[in-house]
Amino acid sequence: MDTVATSLADDEEWELYNDDGFVYKRKKRRLNPDEAALAAVVARPPSMDPETEERNRRERKRKTLLRLKERYQREIDRWELLSSTLRAMEERALLKQASSVWVMDTVATSLADDEEWELYNDDGFVYKRKKRRLNPDEAALAAVATRPPSMDPETEERNRRERKRKTLLRLKERYQREIDRWELLSSTLRAMEERARQRQEHEETPSFGDLPLSSPEIVNGSLVDELLLQVEAQEAIIRDVSNLCDVVEAMCNAQEEQMKQSFIDLPIWASPHELIASLCVD
Image (cartoon, rainbow, N blue to C red; front, side, top):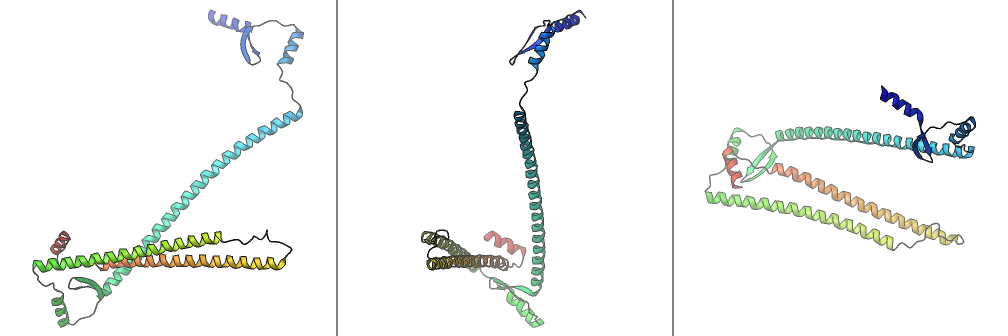
């Protein structure tokens, strides 16, 4: 209690003093009324003219509006990011749904085709052909003909090597066709770039703003020439793009045919043992 009373007594005798930003404690001193009024006037914040106050108010308002603008811009960016993410998710869902529908249609078409086609083994060369109805005698003859003849190991090895050689030749031809198509596409692109560069280099026709106004015949002739050049350039670009589209379409068709051919070229084995033996040999 004595300590608290002493502390309160000390606080009543001391005061905080601000000496141009430097704050410290000093002993309180008693002031007469005139000195007290003078101290109150000195402690009062300096009054500014209305123009300065208005300028400061506008500056504070501008800073506040800038902060609000930045905050709202961040909100808008977040909403745009969320919207783009949702759109991407919807597009992926639509693509997945479309791909599943396409796969189901492809499977259904393949099943329908399998009912009308049959695999035929012509001395090791297996391909598909249309099913044809046979009478009992022809069916028995076909069964005997499709039965693989018993061959000695040397003949089987020779036939296996021949099949392997033909398969490698087909792969070589397919890859060579792909290389030729890519070379054609690359040469077409290079030709387009070269023509565009040549047009830029040889384009010396003045612009519309630089044409002299005093000679209308020259102006009309230059305008016609420039328009003709523009039309020819656009025609060349359209022709090049059309050629590129044809090349891409041909590549897609070839890829589709290769995929179909990979399923058509599947061999047929009479038993699982022959399948395992063929896989081990290959």
